[in-house]
Image (cartoon, rainbow, N blue to C red; front, side, top):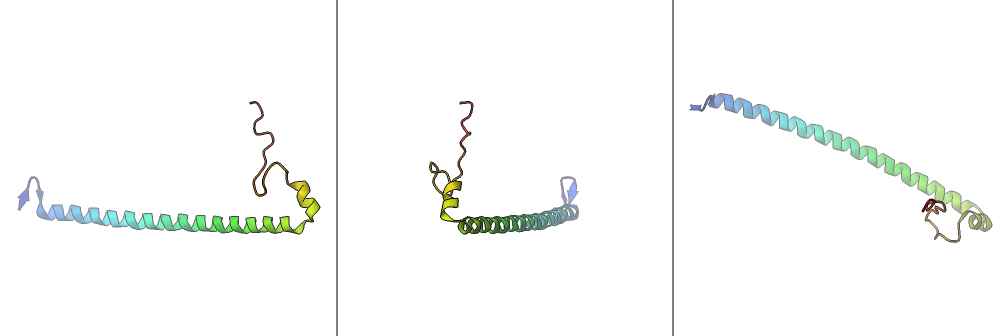
Length: 88
């Protein structure tokens, strides 16, 4: 059976090839997303570990040392940038 210039068997062959390419692209995308997920999960774990270590290090000092290191103008846990408005 002719449909234009492409026979039914040629059309089926083209559609099968396209389906294979789409499946391969989907598998490749799933692999890449899993790789990125693992990367971000490990970075998050490192961040949590580093944060826990810094909190533990802050808790080891005496009260006087902690008061000397924290600025009275900024609330605890927030960084202070005294020169951030330089030039304004």
